[in-house]
Image (cartoon, rainbow, N blue to C red; front, side):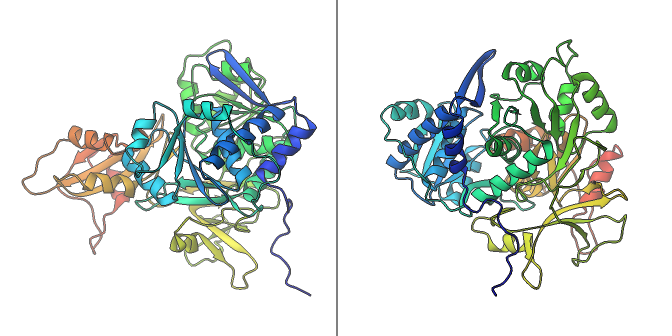
Length: 524
């Protein structure tokens, strides 16, 4: 008798496009994508229409030389074309590589170079920044050109050459180091996430999953698109988040579920109340941490919809924990482990912590089936994140985040992974910001920390020591960052300081910098 597998796959043959083809065959006229293309203007694409568009887009990419295992870079704001290219990649067995439309040329140069993509799809307004980042011969296809090519495309139909465990996407996430890491997400992991979220939220085919957050993030892909795909529901897409039009857009698109970060929730609460705030069909709103009990209560009262907090990462793919939607929703907790999810809280040596104590969140799974496959071209980071048990039967994904568990099984967040700042839903690696500031000729040393911010979760605060005799103002250094970093990574404050708090061996003590800022002092 052979070895018992670590986990039997629940979808041993399915891929992203096998489910698309199934819905196109069984419910071709039902809505699949609903998009507000302009204020008050809605474009609806059926499952049959979407499948045809994906086949044509795959034909365009194939004519560009894209095949099984190739990476296709997508640099777009929210638009149905993002979904078209994503699933066209899946049809060819290729790999989606999306990037933040706010990324700078310098950031794109690293990301596109590291991914190995040879073709990019972008819009006319974003093309100049991208063109300056890519190597000669890299094929940049603008949306207008894509529309022309689609008219004469030779559609690609039939089964995808991709296996369920093949890579479907390469999602870059800023980790605790100075360089982002590429998370390999398989078809199977995507669909496992869809099943997990759809089951927990009781998603039905008549639901519409509202996406107001940027699609290049895992959030809109994992928690909205995938539950719609596995159930045959629809995705309701907006070009961007709007605090003043959130309820109007939800109503216009017929949305029944929505996903938000904490910062958009606070922005919604800060907007002027309207008698139309509750004029929608939303039955549930999921969100990530950082909202107080009072803010949750106010949101639920004003918008007349229950909220469910979850905890997950790009690397975990499905959420690790979620609050139950129909029983005891403990708003400021991360919720309980999803059905079938094994979670441990461990100490630095990997042992389980005592009840009530804080420990690192570790989640069991099967790489390439229920969680990320690996980090692209980074075996050391992969080994640090994915750690098999000695017998090899179970792999534990170590999140780097710490939490406590209460007597009823609800997890409560304690601290995020070292040196990570959460700013308005975006992950900012302090090492990345420090590396940019350190390039300024006047800078001798720099430390970057996150401090609480009422609106945006955390503010980015830099403490800088200048070279002897050098001169540079705070404003000059902030402007220097604006030219080299995406907007959300640019420091809110730069303090010029004579020294930084250190340990006896000279390591900078960031917790002391943070404490001094919070007490009203400077960073030094």
